[in-house]
Image 1 (cartoon, rainbow, N blue to C red):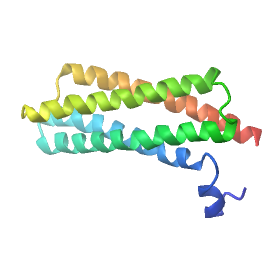
Image 2 (image 1 turned 90 degrees about the vertical axis):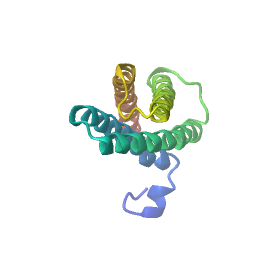
Image 3 (image 1 turned 180 degrees about the vertical axis):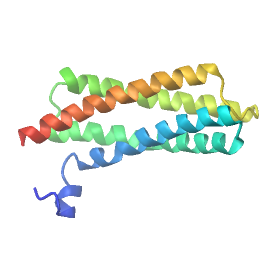
Image 4 (image 1 turned 180 degrees about the horizontal axis):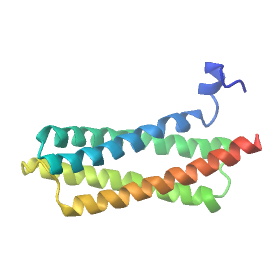
Length: 150
């Protein structure tokens, strides 16, 4: 495969997941940073930016997980999950669920006209950040093993 050929790079059996995965990670991280800054600086605009980043992170997490499942099916023909791959899937699904839970919490805050989230949101947000970091670390390990095996 020529990595400089857009057709072969974009149509590789796992390329879509590798491209999509960065969106929910970055969007969630920035959402959390914006929320912290919104509370610290007491700026409603930052809270709004945080909410929309979180919403898009949640939305993009679904196709990211879906393309990860497709990559597993295409590359490993649906072989039994074990080891790092199983951990990666568990952390990915957990991360996605946590992002959606946090979005639900933020929607409730907005219905109550509360611009900044409370302590439970920030605690769960930190747990989510750690879960996402572990998911990415395991995914990076899988990508490194895959590239070395080619």
